Image: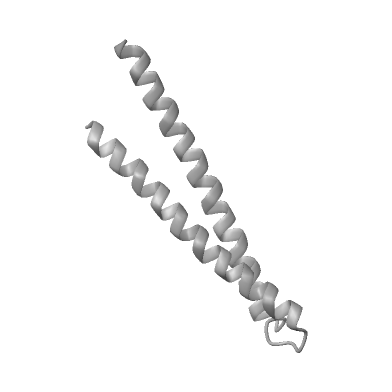
Length: 83
């Protein structure tokens, strides 16, 4: 029973790490996309669709950063409780 429990814990940590890495990757994609729109002047153009797109990218990037930070916190807390 002990070996199976350790295997399940390791598998859960791997899944958490994969989810956290995906969310962090999405964060950088959204934030970089929003910043590119901001710095290329598309954010300040008269086209409201580009302004909305820029704001959505930046907001999604910030939300995903919060989720990624929470995921990393859960992983670190879980590992520290095992030690």
